[in-house]
Image (cartoon, rainbow, N blue to C red; front, side, top):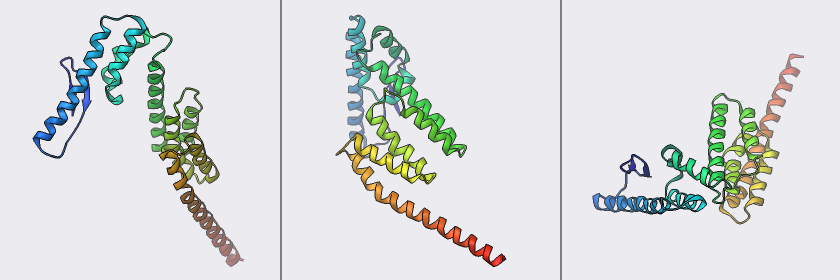
Length: 212
């Protein structure tokens, strides 16, 4: 369920909420307050110019869920880029990275659907090589995407390196703790894969000996 203003621009997304009608009405009031904060920033922006106007527009957009910005606020995003040519707000870079990630994820999904793990890995590595990524994006892609591909390919040394990189990038974080928890699981996967290969090799040798 999207909540939208009179211009059809969404400002919130919600769904079923347990607790009855009164609680849900309170929930809707909270979301409507988001629109009021957005409108206040946008209203102030109308009387401003240049970078200051861009900052107020960014302030208004910052109240909204990231997932609705591109679809509903394209003209505002374009205006910010024109006003803030030096990207003092950092918003232009943020949106460029967001768009690039969306394109990367689409390519990754297509490679996965085509059962092309090497192609998926190439797409991930090309994206991770970008200089303007936030550490949080890098960690998320390493843990949720690259690690899975490497484990599937049984490239366990590289998978272990990914986990160690996460720990190095964000020591003491929840993500680092998650990586450290996965390390022994990865070791068990490696041992299981090696045992399976040894069993397959012994079986093949047995067949060859029997044939003789």
